[in-house]
Amino acid sequence: MHIMEGFLPAKHCIAWGIASAPFVAYGLRTVTKRVREYPEQRMLIGVAAAFTFVLSALKMPSVTGSCSHPTGTGLGAILFGPAAMAPIGAVVLLFQAILLAHGGLTTLGANIFSMAIVGPFAAAAIYRLVRAARLPFGVAVFLAATLGDLLTYVTTSVQLALAFPDPVGGFWASFTKFATVFAVTQVPLAISEGFLTVIVCNALARLNPRELQEMRVATGSEQEVQA
Image (cartoon, rainbow, N blue to C red):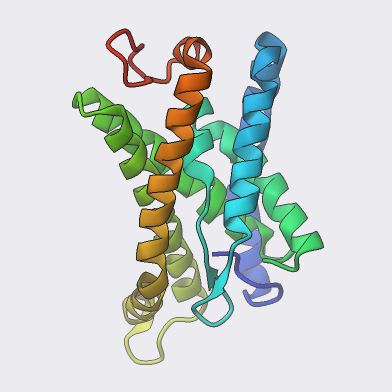
């Protein structure tokens, strides 16, 4: 994730940008509507954005042309739904590309699609499935954040394999190579992110229990509102 500037062919950059644009536009509408209806949630939106920015800026080298790092998008997906994370993630990625040279402008669409779309939608779906199974709040948060992170990197592996298929084995051979190399660093990072997201969610549940219930985010109490 955070595919570097100029690494993808131009047609891939354009295609991923087109694929990401509708999600960002729709997500912007949902965030704008939420802030208009619930202005008191602005601070929590800021917390989710800061959490994503800080965690996703902690990078270490991995696959050539990319890097490994936590994503931080699971928290926002759980609190506000996956659509909201598309514009939030887009802003985070844009600022990181400009200010930190982390990722790139030409690869912004591809990075948005993996980190700000696939990851949050996967995290939100996993969270809801686990909660529907009546498993504890902390377990749901951990699995959502961890697996959402890992699926972000699976998507990046797909993007790189599509751009650089193996000369002999084609797409699948290339995907296997990228995903395997990513796994060395990403699996422990994803697990760490899962635990950290649980800690943050538990802190928010203690400090803002009523607000989280109004947002339909279960807090783990007997009186929780089912998400």
